[in-house]
Image 1 (spheres, helix red, strand yellow):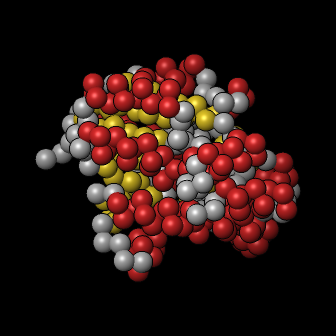
Image 2 (image 1 turned 90 degrees about the vertical axis):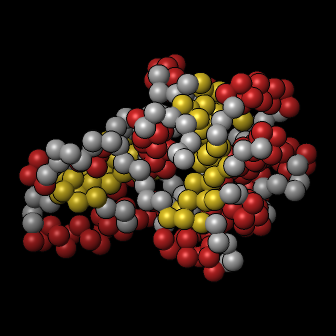
Amino acid sequence: MFPKKIAVFAHELPYPPIYGGIADIWNRIQALRNRGCEILLVAWQDASPLRQPTPEALNHVRKSVMELQMLTYRSGPVAWIKRAILQPCQPAAVTARLSPAEGFGAIEKAMRAFDPDVIWVEPLTAVPLAHRYSEKLKRPYFIRSHNVEHKYTRLVNASDPSLLKRCLNWFVSLGFERYELRMLKASDAFFDISLDDLRYWRSRGLTNGYWLPPTIEAGSTEHWSPSVARYDVSYLGSLNTVTNVEGLAWFCREVAPLIRAKKPDFSILISGSRPNAEIKEIVNSCPGATLVANVESPSDAWNAGRVLINP
């Protein structure tokens, strides 16, 4: 029987869906809503005023869910160190989403009133609070896994040119591998975005995992054809993550010139969230490349290209 009432715990507000991970969450919420599900969404926001969602974004989300509960966390070295002292058994990346006790009251009241059939968590950093209510309400909880997070975190950390950031990221990810394995094993099921990642977890002895490819926006490809695409290739993702920036730099430096030699008018759309200075430099130095920051509709970016790339 398909659950009708779903509590979704998301590590940040999934709107606007300006990069792949957030788009996956938002599109799934829309798909569940279209299937007739009622959704209670619990999401986190950074305490920094510059990174908080706009009133327009909050109102847009409220139109798609039965109830929205927002929690606030603090980022930065001082907050990380404080959390490490107070909660030394949890990775700092996770304790950021463990809200102060006074924040739990409103969430617990909302969860009990909503009485979900299941609890869905996106991604691992949001698990502890969801796990708590799974035990309290005696409801199953499922995890959406976007990466083998401890391996991905190490890769990102090793690629960062800043020694200070590498040290901070190392500190934030301490204990993450043990935590990730423990949480996935304890869940009623986890749904991995990648078959390769799922095979990795099976090699680690986990048998409760399933493959779930990214959810795309309903109807977004119904009228698409290569003839209406405005670019030869398109990309959508975070434009400040080190590995993504490196991948795009490689594509523009090594691949694009080979294609351009055969097709001089070769065009590239690079879109996503919070582009850093390096991305802007890459686009400026790559003939035929266009940068669109913080797109509100992922389908616009996907449909704009004849081929979608993920270097």
